[in-house]
Image (cartoon, rainbow, N blue to C red):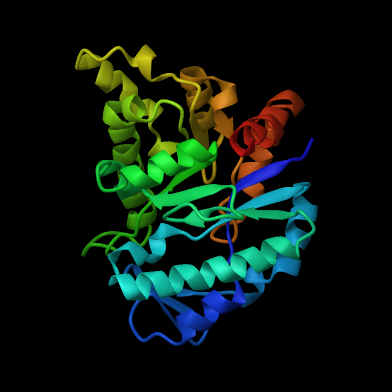
Length: 288
């Protein structure tokens, strides 16, 4: 039985080369990553596969699931630019996976591709199911899973603190994606396993308001919808456990965007039985 981190990002060398060649977001300006959200220092060592395996060993994790984060804003690019970046990432990710000795698997960005364990999409895709129906049907038919990650924002609004987008924007978009899935997606794709990043932005908190609108919220507690716990703590995870049950939760770290250790300590602080479900049993269901 392998312990799995379902939410990690890594920029392989072909993708870094593509970013260096660009002059419009997203691009690399020396050691800074420039996106439509702003400029961020990029620690290249954190994207070295060998260094990342060292972090897995430190954390006692056997396998990491890699994805290309939609927060880079690729969905907003002209198709030729988006495709060039996605394909560079796909090329590099397949090489990293092949050379990792089983320590990495990867999610294909935006559509199904052979050699991947599922597909990652931005949160906005679930607000427009008709446009993405072919992707969702393909993932379901393959028996793979869909990872829903926040889309890119447009930067910090005026007179707002620097953390605004990370705390408010991402969470709001994930809640919108989850409630769109509850409202229409589940009925259209009943067999599709869907994993929402960052507890779907705190989705359980909204179910009581949904009930006030006459919705039988028991109907949304299905076994094909999952939530990963990155960046949250004990209180939020306890709320999700009370709402959805422990087997719907999976451990994810969001490495290297944030330090994996705080979330990992919280998960293991619940005890060995809970940690085994989040790190081993639920990921095994997703990766089946």
